[in-house]
Length: 376
Image (cartoon, rainbow, N blue to C red; front, side, top):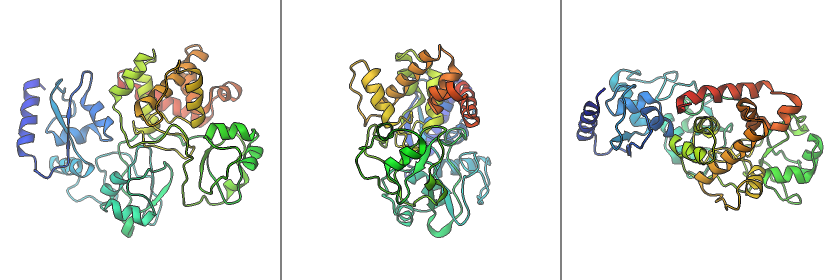
């Protein structure tokens, strides 16, 4: 499509847009595509294209404005184009394609990149009612893998356009009643100090029930793993801090290039890990855009940051930390990208000692497949 036609389409859309629209304007930046704009906002290209009256393969014009819709507005635009049914059913695809990871009885399993607002919108309930039904702060964070009860017992919302369905974080564990850091360390074969350092914990502190922890990769499951996980979730108070910020692919790629790391590789890992969502906390206590563990954050700050003081509340610095760690993995693996990707997920020493686990192979394949979407 010629640039002039794109601008005419945008102007027509802006003139006829409903005044009450919650869509946000986005000015096209150098290197951006319709896909990257959609991906950075947890939407599909088809959704953003439909809302803006464009074809999916339209070339966006530098400096022009693309309107980024809410999930509800995006779905309505898809309905108008006939891309989805006018009356959605529980099984109908919404603005995103993946099938919902939902359990029975009106519950929903949180996916990477999900927010309470997005889930509420897709389920057709208010944020306040969804938060109240689950004992959550309406402005709080969600833990990937946790289960929400949908207010009113409605159908599970379709998942948003988050990272390609990938393996669960390795070593994820939620503290059960009676667990202590000492017992967990002993059962998984590491020292208390090592487990505390990796998770940003006080070795002598109390371990609240429901605390999310990273256990050593490949270690035997603790005895508590055979019992139901607590409903409540406690995130240790440690850096980096999950904050309600989102970055774009261009943000991640720019930081990667500054550190001499392939921009497409860093963006693919960030998208697989969090969907560029700095508010993401995994069930293994990893945080932010690059899903950086507290222990990894401290390691990067002390050994790789070169005197730069990283801000634990900054989404950009979360990417700086993750990219610096990725660069170290690339250096330590002699530039073997697959080994470095595996090391980011499984731990490089574990990869060397045990080889890639099956879920690690899946993770590597996902990341490599995603790279083509980010110019790599």
